Image (tube, rainbow, N blue to C red; front, side, top):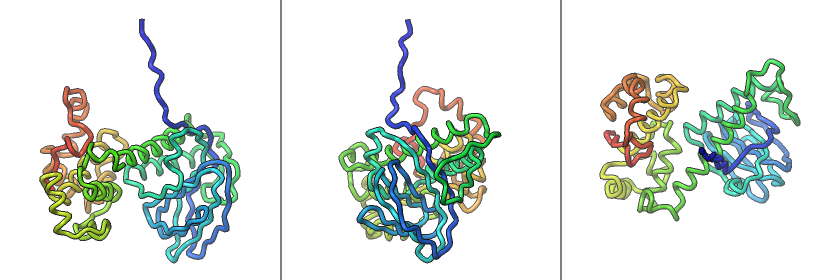
Length: 305
């Protein structure tokens, strides 16, 4: 007799209220509102000043803020005209507590999920995505099969990835990764900027750590340098994207901040011993082999800069 396993679902999106992609002017001001569902704002370009409850902060490209149900929030442009992704939804699971007051940076794979949400929403709904007055989404008669389900699936994956990242870099879980708190903080910074062509000086400025101290800490933790580790993160992400099969090599190179697909291919070959094409052809075989490479930086063996 077979016994079914009912999948655990830490969070489930039960309703969609709005999905927007706004391109605002530099003088834009939104006086504010509150509502009884969740909402997040992701800054795709420019700078945005957000008031959430009694606190305000400035968000730049790549950052996201969450507003819990009932929280008053207002926003305004700061100089550079902002482009925003705004999604509001219902989810009553306890896992959402982790998003209360959350302001964080979105990584390249999470941005791909946001892009999928926007793309599917444009196909699923006749309501313009740039219409601020939207109070109800209207279905297209010719919407692709399952578009709304794919939106919710991408949204749930997006939220779960953010939750996993918070767990991974929770100081109480430090022993499972980096022992040194500074190294863990740098690792989180590198993952959040995996699409950027960072230099060591950029990293030092971003995490407020001196160059020599940073190199010493990382060598003690990984046996290599910061930029070697950053390269390994990029290769790990590239391998995952190739396995997922949603992007071609040119798109993957662009998503990961490589200057060209040819340079990406050289770096990939140097790190893995295979070209991206060779790796793509061997994915199924490698995935089915016992002891196949794990999708973690520690197991990747790709510290070849």
